[in-house]
Image (cartoon, rainbow, N blue to C red; front, top):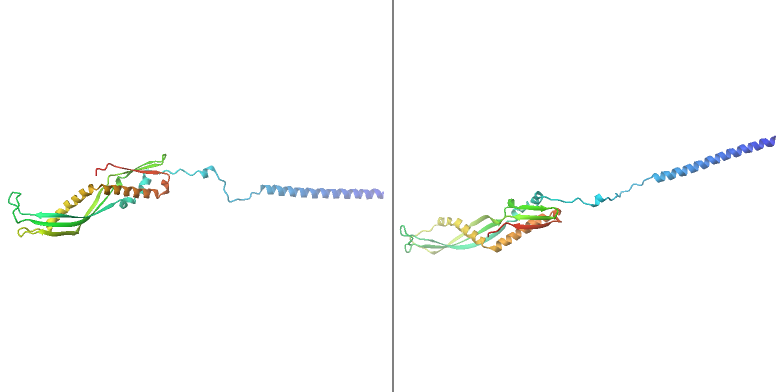
Length: 233
């Protein structure tokens, strides 16, 4: 009887130990599986952003006539070309017989005069036009015919030298004042025939406008060309 009791106790103890072992093993296995799952679900943040096609392709830059006009707006004073001159002429004044062109002898005053002035020439920026082709990457600048913008004759530079003085005729400086307009007209006519001056003015104008346009990286891929209106000079 005692042997059966002892055997029963041993059996119970073994069962209890087995249950405990199974529980411990199950706990260990569950913990390992939980850690593995948690590890698999952890996402490590990164500062690197995925590169997409949209980020690689930059948006196409397109410009219009107004954009180009704003680029060259500062050229107003820069495209003005100045021509400085010093010249001389002869002034004669005589008394004539009434109602004739016959000069009365010994009544002629002859005076040589010298003078200096400055002619400013260029283009009217308000008349500049543009043609922009974004597909072909071309910009054509249409420039108006250059012209005289201002003309200043330096009155302080005006000097007279008597060559022949008549005691019968008096030539006053006020008589020469009427020549100012004629002198300016004469100098402008001389400048009209100075092709080198106008060629240089055109080159300088193109260079100035192009430098202003290429200063903006929007026109890096554009070809810039110029066309002048017919020049009659």
